[in-house]
Amino acid sequence: TEAVDFAALIPPSSSPSLVSSTVHTTRNSIQEARSGRAIGGEKRRRRRRGSMDRNLSGFLIGCAGAAVTLLAYQQTVVTSTQCIAAGFVVLLFGLFVKEGFISL
Image (cartoon, rainbow, N blue to C red; front, side):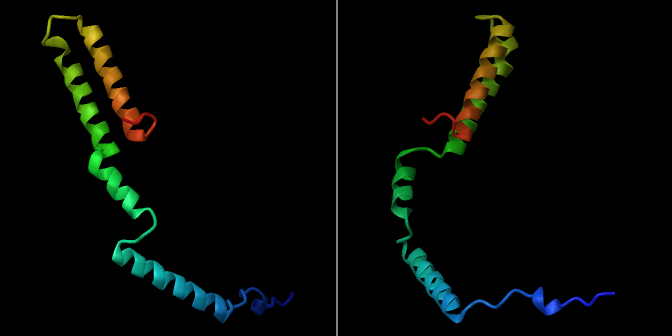
């Protein structure tokens, strides 16, 4: 049998300068996050004020598509097949908005 050198399997310890710079960087990012100066934070806040969330938009469009599909047999304006197809198209549109393929 051969002897295995387990000490060679242990990775070398990181240098103290790398550890201290990582701690310093982490401390700065925590302070920036607390003060609200995180990178891109103001852009996100501005975007959210004027527009609806993508998930909420997709959900509401999906609800409209489900309503159109469920009303297929209650109305007499178009055939039930056409109404179900229109509801399906609206549901797909809601899915595409939610997934980000289409933006409103």
